[in-house]
Length: 494
Image: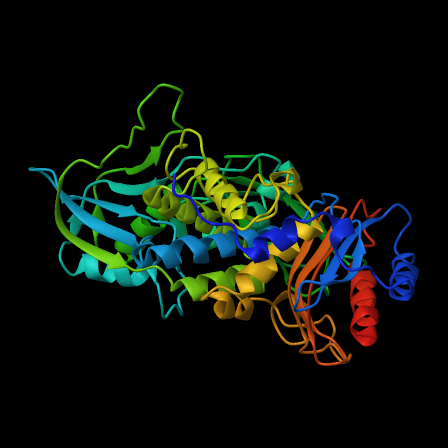
């Protein structure tokens, strides 16, 4: 294990709350009056500090809260940190298409992912296209045997602990994998027909459809789909009004490696390549205690390989933070864990299986320990924030934000954050207010949870760093508007 000195900055955040500068009571009273507008029972945690780290406002700053997608701040900072130490890690993670000679018969074709590329099957695709790889393969052979999906770069762990079952079938909960095609999600569209008839449904032929929906003459559209875990049958039910617009939703994919192999098979056949074999997948199983890490290797000698390199790290981080993209966050956590393992910067203890969720979380714990964040201030179970097991304090979040801003990659990290009133998940928030263009922060929304953490430019022009979390929000009302109003009050007073 490599040791790192604890900086004075880290020690600042290790100090107990009472050692910090006293908070003006008047500002606290103003903010608490705003927070009182939230639904009864909502629990808030707030910490705001100035450029010197002095507290501007603190409300329950050391309590632990479910952070939702504020988790992505930690994942993306980890990726920048470990990949800055090893630039080669940032360009690892590409997708490779190999033609494998078996000695007799048609060669097999294997597509293997490294977690850093989302290939697209869209007809208008211009970059990172599955069709481009299929074109290259079709130019060298007109017949293949098996089509193999290989996602062994990561351990075969489809979902994180604490993932809500009802999110699994949606694009918010698609299964993490090293092999990514179409962000491992697919579009479902429903167009009304004549009253009394089933609506017209468009769905990838990868799935089978059970259409129980009905078009009605008038009224609200109330549609829903259901898909059991690891099932490819989709049940659509409910009603859609005859005059209603097209209804759209995204579904998650539970077996990304199989879907990628299927999509490649479809692309090859569309180009006149005969597929004489079957679809196969190769996974890296979860390592059992005392057993070696078994990684299957597709049989056959590589005749030719085509590589699609990963997206640049800053671009991938911007995708994650601006759009709050869950799948990419989970993949990046696992890539960061692989890079950290190669650098031997894990905390004391036996290293966990490379390419696993646990390896990424162990690397995150090591980083937070180096920057002085108390271990008791957080627990993470995933890299995206979809797990209901995640917990972190506002103080730990502000410590991360202040430390990250002072790293060589801090400018790129900050640029990845949504900007109030302008872009990302904040494009509609703060619009037309004095804080438009002055809030740079990561949003977070999950059941009974809202969070917003980042940086804001106050009325005086000075910059503040903040973490704002709301848990136990009753019903479907949400606390986002209250958080925004409280930040406006803080900005005006500073």
